[in-house]
Length: 92
Image (cartoon, rainbow, N blue to C red; front, side, top):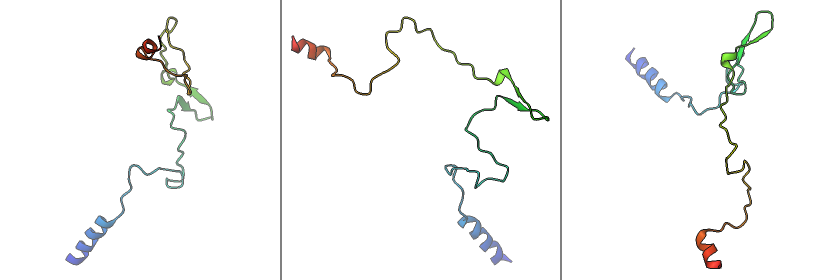
């Protein structure tokens, strides 16, 4: 009896544990698992196949007023030569 208990504990220790870094796909999950696109639901399904949108669950984006903002929205990947104050003084 004691030997069975020891071998059982040994099996538990040798068992490969799943890492939290493993990707859970529909092939590794139960049959009715649907992964989705990592989005939060914005409502719920009704019994008759409809969908009710709950306005409290919709995302609310707060955008600041950028009328007098000096920078532009696009930054070039290939900027021209950047000149510092020291380089411009040396050129003069």
